[in-house]
Length: 205
Length: 227
Image (cartoon, rainbow over all chains, first blue to last red; front, top):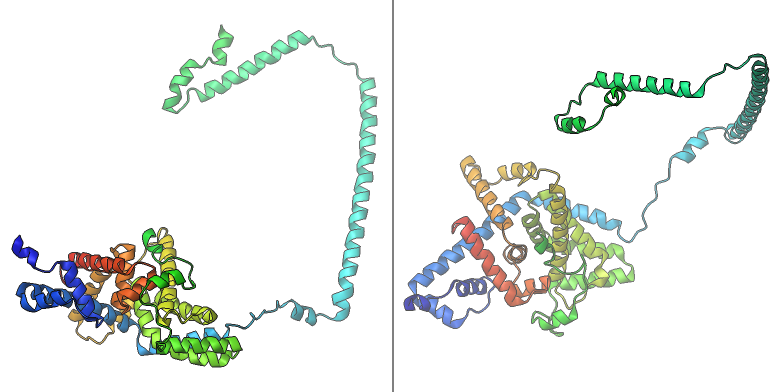
């Protein structure tokens, strides 16, 4: 343990590497130790080799992608983009004026007015005619209904009997529905179905 | 992913926080000469303010040429898609030109630009993550794969091995924590020092170093000591 404590820690080795790489003065005791201690010198060499290989690989990869031609093209693109800096944006006009120019003056100005006036008049006449026809037909129908009511005697219906008959018809209809559907197809609902009183059971009781 | 998206605070284009910058030793002394790109940015800002846009555009092309390759490397490592990386870089340059009046010499141009670029890349990753919930995402686009296949190495076996190695590397980087990935990308592929990364991300420099160390350790573990 005592022997290892004398060696440079990894962080100090890394500081030495950074100082050397950026041309800064290395910590003097660390530099002396590196010069004297073989294992630490070897560790330092490994670290420096690893870091340099990392950098070399990264730079080589980027340089392979960004060739001199690419750089030149990019410079041109940047210059092109800078031309528009500080200038107001150009507004591109909508092609509507050119389409209007193709039309003659009389057509472009008078025709829409006549068309609008004719359409409005037609609409007004149509609505008025429809309203008057409906009013006439409704009045005729009302007169016919009154005359018919006066001529035909009303059948005498016993209210209680009618209600019972309609209830029986409803029950029969619902029972038919239930028979048609039988049981619910969903298994989870069977329990609910068993608990629920059915119309046919009520009517039987 | 969500942690990563908050790595770089603030909107896409952020004015330098003078308090934060004051705490960072990276701040340039008033008498120090400006770097070439920063000087160009100052000139472009002056031209834009005077309304000489054509001249400003011409000067800006030099700025594009200076940072284009590095920007593409960073964007490509973030997005793993050449078309998206291309668009992200273009957008970043256009944003820089449009907001050139906001540039302050307190920041090196490289830092300002990289911050804008990374914010754009993070937005795109976020949008892609949303998209990928509904669509099947590929690891690498077929166009990129085809381009990789026509690389300098003519040996098919070597090409295949290189492709596998890159796929493993991309997968390992993708498994890093959001902040670790951002810091690692900027330091490793963006050639930024930990101080510059701390200015870009708003993180403390020692925090950047810790993230960087942890990222490297995790990558070594994932890749078995060699990429």
